[in-house]
Image (cartoon, rainbow, N blue to C red; front, top):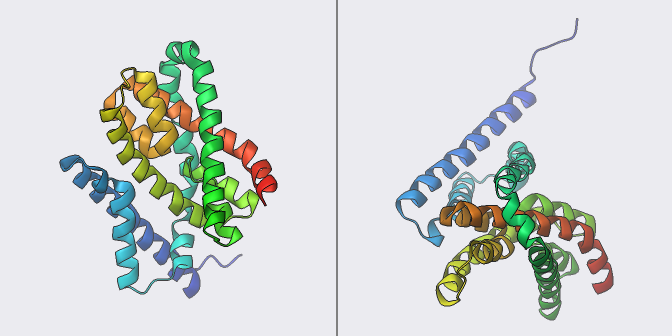
Length: 239
């Protein structure tokens, strides 16, 4: 009969996983509560939750690799969460059929500019190549960005940080642009937020309306697919 007892190292690993998972989820829920009471770009959970978790980790002298291993299952949940965007997209399929050529052109042009400018600016600053390649897929949702980063020689965990920063700044700038630009249609507002701020933009777009949220979700997914298909080619040409 096999020995079913836990060793001390296994038990410690389980305890560490439970602790950091609880800390991460708890910080996120608290950040959501703060954001609901104080709706501003700097109160978004994408910013507050990582800052809170980082502060706790620093106070406990925790190692990043230990934290990453303990919360890896949360990263895996990003894939199903992205797929869930298909539900509101399907609900607005008539609107999408009407504007799909414009949306497709916008996604291709926006993605190409985002990848190219990120890489070239990093090259002008003489950053290490691994950092340049980590920056290039930053303008799409985390599951796509981390996959692309790993495929082209970047650092996926670092790319995830760039994605978060892009989402926060994109959502903040998106609100500003909608105030100064004549973006009256739901399609234009949703496309702006989905392309410029990916998941953070989709969340912001859903607060504007169902059509804005669906268009933003579609643009985010299409941009992710375009990045997955084209980033290796672009990286090879720019090396």
